[in-house]
Length: 440
View 1 (tube, rainbow, N blue to C red):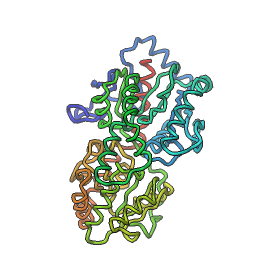
View 2: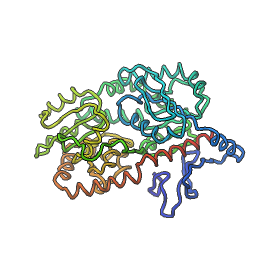
View 3: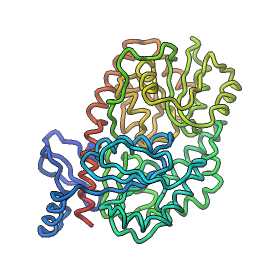
View 4: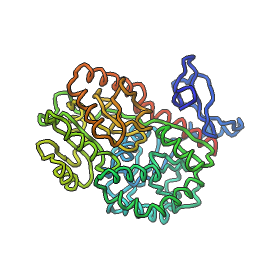
């Protein structure tokens, strides 16, 4: 966020736009045209003309390291899937992912790197496989850009890559560990990956410090995570940009296909302690009307069922549906009365964007990543993280006031159209990639 309250790349009242700078700052520029232009970054004209000539003669080749792609793990997998829809048809993209990675998008090639396992095991396997295979993969696919996703540090063990590396940053180990610790203090179950994170945190945090010392190009999905990285690690970046996540609902089912058994309250996302699911269960016990909650997402479903039962919430109040097809997820979102995002930390969650795009009333935690996206009382009701009483009160307000629910949902839907479209994300991402190439 700029000092004047605008997002990077957001127009001012005077109609100017903001360009990305090599040091991550911003400066006024001429209004953008419909075509994407290079981030010139002060390069000499002969260098730029050669780069523009290259752009005209062939598609940009992009390699993406994403162990989450093809696995139902939440935000990063959703991000990569969405971005491919905006980049794939016009660029040659190679995805280095898990064995489940597949794509039917033209000009997208998938390369399996690992054979599965638990979340943390898969990340380690991916790092080792990338260290071993990356030189040959670079020679084979000859990418102009290599994109990796943090906080997984998939390229932590690699060196000597002969093309610019862009670290797309969704969260940090530091931020996640803080959220996990808050959840644990409030008696929440923890996923095995969360337990492992806390166990090996004394090694992970120095690794993250080392990692950021060598990062030179970073794309952040929110100002919240950008501020955290810049404040905690002070990386020596040559270029940086904030590009908010974007979403297309082209795959949404037709209106009328909604399930008849949907609960009025809906939670979507991975079943993790730091996502605040235990806080939501406790809030549900304070609702006097017996309202039901549906929970969708991957994780230890049986553990969370036992946790709900320990709070007196049986299957008549809470249903844990596990992983469901995306079309069903969107259908359940469409008919929910309220969507809840009770996390202890967030950056730019797709669970929130999906609810906004479908015009749903939202109750969410008042944490930096969320407050960058919605405003309390205008496009959502925000409550302190970890406060089940406040969460129950906000839920009750929406469930008992149809006028408020409609107003919040309409405002959220407009925000999604204005700020979180896939076209906007794809265009701004390409613009930043062009800046990195011109600066390298």
